[in-house]
Length: 499
Picture 1 (cartoon, one colour):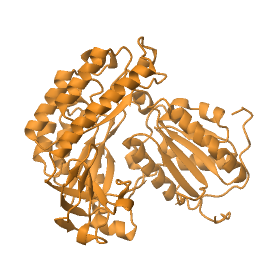
Picture 2: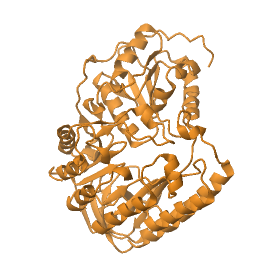
Picture 3: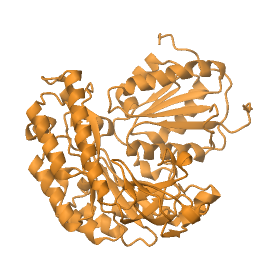
Picture 4: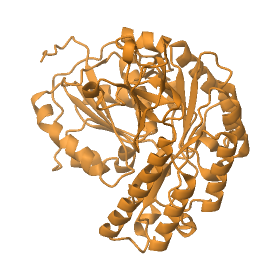
């Protein structure tokens, strides 16, 4: 391992847990640090700054974080140059508790003040003491901050942050705050900047994307935004996640169907097929409304792939309630489903509800749900055998690619496709486009083992081959634009509170 010197740039790593919003926030964290002179460390290296971007949705999130912090304590004891920072939803929730439990942590920052991280690291080094800064509301929209994008071909674009819903199982609104919408011109400018860097696919992100426009009073704003994306030359695919069924309007379905670069894929959380459970969850739609949206989507786009989220074992869920969920799953014919066992989160109304279910009942229902979902997704995937699909070649999607000699990517409908490069072997790069024929279907993926019908080289593929990833500029908004940060070799003193 190379030994750092006081004059060498400080290095960093970011470990991300949770949703796509967190993944995109981590791109902002990386962009901020590199703007301030830090250099990304190799995965196998020991960084000067380790940042944990945390999630608070699942019950084991706390244990996972404190376990990782515990593993780092002896590393930091041996390396006084190292700093540890904790951000994200768990940091917003636990605040000063993190430093109490892990006094070797240097910085704790929340979901609302990502942009403060470089100056908090400087301050912690200068003062040789932990810095905890948790704001109650957003100080600056994250997309005004610089970003180091992780992909040459696909980019996340936030259209809103926060959520105005009050689902009883969800802690996110209390940690991310009320919905804040970006102006359409700012969003489209970011999309154009990504396309100019070679990105061919964007995913519009929000806790509830189809309520976009609520802050500036335009109920149809999201459909208009989708259509505007269709006018951006060079943008080949547009996706979005996640919509809420209560806000889903017919104009969005029309925009999806009529805008050529908007993919016919829809991720729409169901959570439960029981109206009684939906009512207890404070999900303001019912199963009939949900299935009605799917019916309209498929009428407009017969090839649409619809995916969902489902929670099993919500407090008070009866066997009859669970059967209603299975009924909706069978009617909806999802191409994929993210399934979860209900996880009690302190601070949510559901955590104190009567009717908390025993683990063994939840597990048994969960296994039945998985079996039902896989039976349906396999049957739906089998319908595509013999069909030609357009695949955007990806990195890291196929865990067995090296062993099987295949490459992997996503079809326009979002399905994962593993394919044989055939005579194009050695020519296909991440970000390129391949047309190929499906030869086999599994519950979670498709295989295409014949010769590809075509291969199109792209600017994203050129960037991947050159080792470049897009960087979008931002406004630092009062944060210092410094070179390589000053280095203090004095270790931060241990807190007197036991870990």
